[in-house]
Amino acid sequence: MKDYTKSTGTKAYKAFTSLLISLLILSISLGAFGVQPTQAQATTYPEYVVQAGDSLLWIASKFNTTLEAIMQVNQIGPDSTLHPGDKIKIPSLAGLEGVLSSEYVGLGTSINSLSRRSQVELGKLIRLNRITSPSELFIGREIFLTDVEQETPSSASAILEGQTFLELAIKSGQNQWALSHRNLLTNPNFALPQDSYYVPSANAQSDTLAVPGIGSVSIDNLPLRQGETYVLHVQSPSNVEIEAELVNQSPQFTDLGEGKQIAFGGINALTEPGVYPLTMTFRRDDGYVYRFDQLIVVKSGHYPEETLLVDPATMDEENIRAENAIFYEIIKPITPVQYWDGMFTSPAQDIDCITSKFGTRRTYNNDPNIYYHTGLDFGFCKGIDVYAPAAGKVVGVLPDLIIRGNTIIIDHGLGIYSIYMHLEKMMVEEGTMVQPGQLIGLIGTTGRSTGPHLHFEINAQGVPVSPATWLKRVFP
Image (cartoon, rainbow, N blue to C red):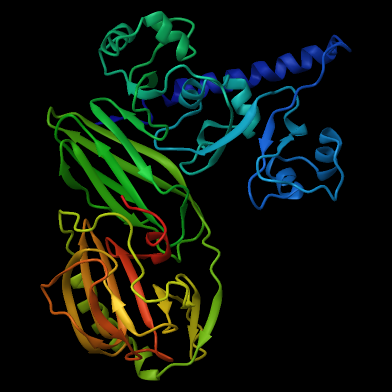
């Protein structure tokens, strides 16, 4: 098995360390010989473009500087009003220039590949982001770049074992020396097998992992957060078996044809924020096996807390286990088709009539155990009708459940299920294909409920994820 991630890791780490030492020696040498910038040299600063909701204090904190320094360099006062689009000079990055932009670290990104793609010098990139070790480039970490004009977008490509940089250049229709210069190499012979290099492309992707023999691998919906959906995409010119492991979940891939594979997953809302390993294994038809490991950051969902008083029978452990066994058996299959198209719509008549949000930490009847709300609760501000939010197949019509009450389950394909609990009336039958906006039931207060409402839940391969996200963006 080829460990794709670590095959050149030692060389990259040594090169990174050498660069840091060289920068330190240069800094000490300049100080020792009294080298100072001449009076004619004006200090340059990169500029941050103000976004809606930004404040001077927040910008200072983001770039490891002080409010006073920000005001001094920009010649503004503490009462100055910021407007989206304003440009603020960043004093902690004196000596650099350009307009700052940001992105999230994608699959397979290294400090070298990021420098090559962005065309930002390695030393500047290290300083911009206060990087002290290559291992700090977690997937989902926000990285700052300075904008550089590029003639052509670029996409990642990897050198196969036994392949030369010249062959890569010919394959991409490029001059090897021009391609070498683009990738910040002083000589094409310095290119390393299985390392990522960037070639001009009309369909560039900034968050794509270059795996030898695999077209592209990427992860959608970064940065990952508690209770959120993620999507793994793989494009390959030939058949490849893929395994993935992330935060105690092994998302299963579905072959969509034309070399495309996809896997949905979800981060449990109770997962502790922090850094976790993502492992992916690729098995090609020719027998080659590549293993990829990279750390990925999971951020907090910032969920509130609440205490509820409910019928003690709905908190009985035996009742919960028995009902969960039935429920999770229904949502276990991964249907290898996508029934839905576009964004999910609200299952309730009033999308703003929300009585309890997803992820809320809950305690019941003074029980010390911490639970969390696995769905989005809608009241009945404008009516009690419940609609299908997207196309799918009804796979569960479950009456009189102790916890969930009258419940409908719809399979939307690819491991995505929507669930409707506490209904007064269920108006579809198991096996029915439903369309967006089709009436499926009426809001009620059956099961573990403190009043009439609809509990709307979405599961991604068995993990409850925030329905609000599905109502705001298109997946995949």
